Length: 154
Image 1: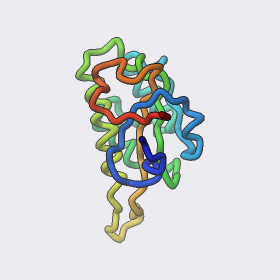
Image 2 (image 1 turned 180 degrees about the horizontal axis):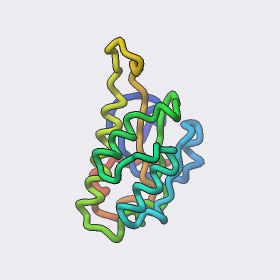
Image 3 (image 1 turned 90 degrees about the horizontal axis):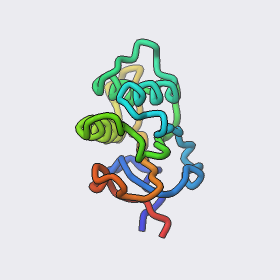
Image 4 (image 1 turned 60 degrees about the vertical axis):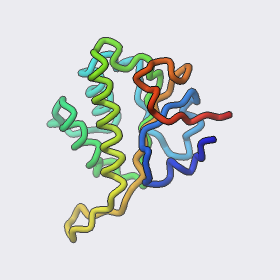
């Protein structure tokens, strides 16, 4: 069974799937992203950047997304949980490789946050938990998510 404290630490894995609603994760103050409005890659960038209050100059490619995800100084939380509702609708109008890129980018972001920055510069910080949860009506509904660990209530 999944240990919910996993979302409070910096260890991987950083990306999960669940059938549970966001209310179960309120203890993490999740950032709720609406899968229903993310059917294309442009929609994904728009929704993520809007919910993260990203700067206007944020580019629309995975490198720019990773840069935004690993900065977030304007949000300044002790932990980050991105909760994608209705994930069965994410990128349904794109090729599978686009979804693979999104999942990989999210995992890279979690890995980066898991490392403290100790360079004696203004942006030094401790390791900070960063996790992503893709919520489905039914787990493993899309084979693209089969290799992502599940959070189950059972």
